[in-house]
Length: 143
Image (tube, rainbow, N blue to C red; front, side):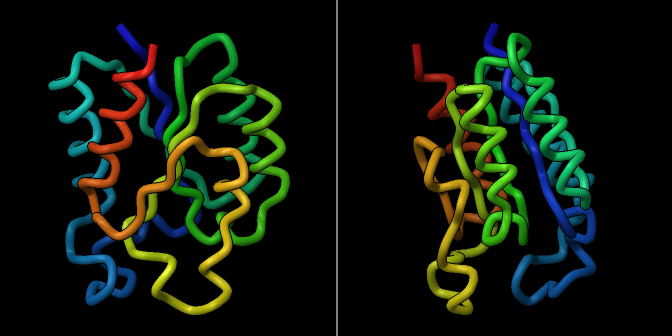
């Protein structure tokens, strides 16, 4: 059984509260359950974690080495600012899919660049929760 680490970054714990017109009204618990249910359906073991702290996210990535077969990451605002998260992903060398609930490419200019995309094999943006399902499917199809 494949094991995937799903990392959610800053402010994702505020889903359902933060800008519901943009992010919807479903809360973080609903996102976590959705990911776990979709993973189970695919026969994947998924661990879903969240942190508002850049260093803790780096720690999650580093601890994935030798434990997980791939990483799905939605780093929130750190997507656009964090070289250290990029470096951690490169250091562990695991297959990675970047996910964004909204279409970062049609939002403010500063959101259009992603450091994570410099390493991720695939970026899925603007599909809401379904983006995580597609990321799970992608990693599941990898050898």
